[in-house]
Image (cartoon, rainbow, N blue to C red; front, side, top):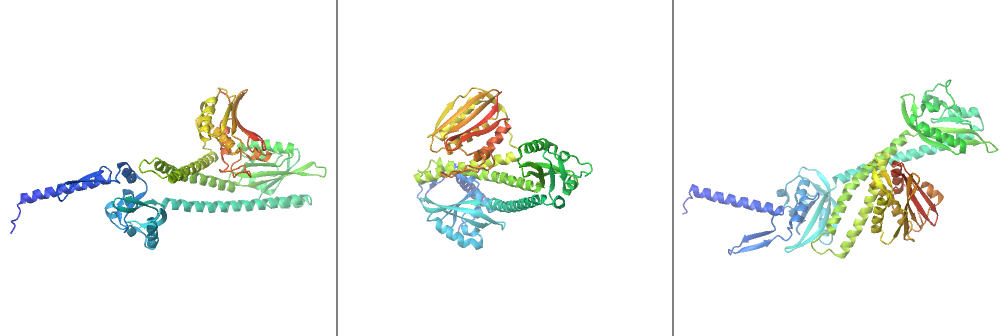
Length: 554
C-alpha cells in the first residue's frame, strides 16, 4: 500500500499545480491579446516542438479585438472556435460562455432555419443576412451576419462579422415617420394652395359684377384681403384684416399695414411694393404680421395682382395675405430632418471609407485584381456620397443660420493656384489656362472660397464634355476683384440663368444625366453673400458659360 503523503509534500505539490495553472492562464491571455505568436511545447518523447500561430498576427488580432463589430469563426459543425470580446458583449455574455458553443444556440428560435440556410450558403460564397440573436438578458437584437470562408492548415472555417442593427433599425423607423409627416404636410400645403388659388380667382372675377358682393365675400374668407389704388394708397381691408391686426376701422390710414408688419420686414416689403406699382408686375413677398390677440408675429404670403380696364390701364390692385406659419414650421422640421439624417449618414460613411482604405492597403496575401477594382469603385462611390452628405450639412446650416467661419486675409493668386493644382490632379485630361491673376488680397475664409472656386471648376468639367479647355481669371475693377471660370460647354438658357443659384435646381441636358442634388451653386451663393460679395453667370446657350464672384478688396 502507498503510504499517505506528508503535509509538506502535499503543500509543495499544490503550489506546483497552482503555479502551472497561473502560467497556463497567462499563456491563454497572451495568445488572445496578440502578445504570443509561437509556442514551444515539450512532447511525449521529451523533445521540444515549435507551434506557430499563423493567424495570430498581432496587429490584426488587436484590430479585430478592438473593432466595433463582433467577429467569430465557426467550424463545419457551427461551433464557435474563436470570438472577439465585442461579440460576447453584444450578447451580454462573456468569452467563456461563448467559445466552444454552437452559434445556433444564440439564434432566435423562429429564425434558426433561416440561419442554417445562411450558414450553408456561407461555405459556398460570401453572403450576408439579417438575423435576430437572443442575448443572455433575454433581449432579441437584430444583427447583420456577413459570412466568408477562411482556409487554415487544419481545414476550412467560416468567419462571420456580426454588426448590431439596433440603431439603424431605429433610425429607419424614425425616417419613415418623418417622411410620412413631411408627406402629410406637403399634401396639406398643396391642397391649401390649390384651394386658395381657386378661391382668389373666383373672388376676383366677381369684383366686376358687384362691389357689394365682393365685400360680402371678402369679409367671409379666412385670408386677409385689401385693395389699393394705382398710387399705392389702400382703399379697402376686409373684416379678417381688422380682426387680425386689431386696428380700429375708424382710425385706419392709407399705409396702416406698416404698423403691423415686423420692423425687420418693413423696408423690403415697401421696396417690393413700390417696384410692383411702377412695373405693374405681381407683388409677392413673405413677411410677418403681428396678431393682436396674442401680440405674436406670424409669417404670411402676400400677393397683389393688378386689374386692368379696357385700355390696358391699371385701375385697382387686389391683394391677399395668407397665414403660412404652419408651412414655415413644417419646412423647418424638414430642414432639421435633413440635418439629422446627414449627421447620421456621415459617421458610418467615414467608417466605410476607413475600412476600404484598410483593405486597399492590406500587405498580406496578394489581393486579386478584380477585388482591387471593386475596392476602387466602392471608394469612388463613397467619396461621391460624402460630397452629397457634406452639401446637405451645409444647406441645413445655411437654413439654420449657422454657416459660420473665421475671416482672414486671403491672397487671390494663392487661392487660385491652390485650386488649379487640385483641379489638374482631379481632372488630368483637361487643360486649365490662367489669365490675369493679380496678386491682391481680400477678407475671407480660404476653405470656403476654395469650395466655391472648385465648384465652378467641377461644373465647367461636367457640362463641357466635348471641350477640355477651361479658363480661370482674376481681374481687379476699382475696389473689388472678380474671379471667374469659363468653359466652352452646353451653356445656359435665359430661364436656366434665372434659376441656376436656386436651391435644388439642376441643369438637365439630353446628352447626359446630371448628377448631384442641385445644391452646390446655392451653397456657393450663400458663401459669397456672407463675404459681402456678388455671384453671377454670363452664358450663351450652346457656346459655354462664365461663372464669377466679386469680392471687395482689402
